[in-house]
Image (cartoon, rainbow, N blue to C red; front, side, top):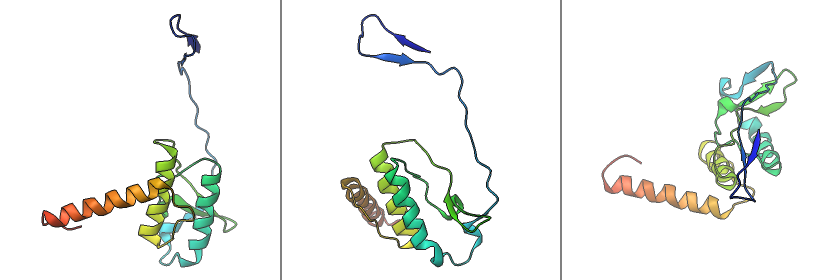
Length: 132
């Protein structure tokens, strides 16, 4: 239901009364079940590029969120819309670099800012004598 408040001509308030989540069932194998995922790294990178081109991000990159369907096609699951899109996309590339050694195709300012923040936090942990 949409309502317009009297004092605010340009604002429309939305009230969600019902919501639905639609899932597609996929016969699958999680990538985390494989010892060596090296053959899939390029395809993972291509999936993330495609995902980002649609204005989406995972923001939760790890092997359990990549699955192979019954026709051996790689799929990405568990997408999130929580957070600022550019930051989530930067987090996707940083996770791919950290866990799989995949370099970002497009490095945004957020990629560099988050990289710097992570390096700074690591440095502070070392100063306090904690493991990085």
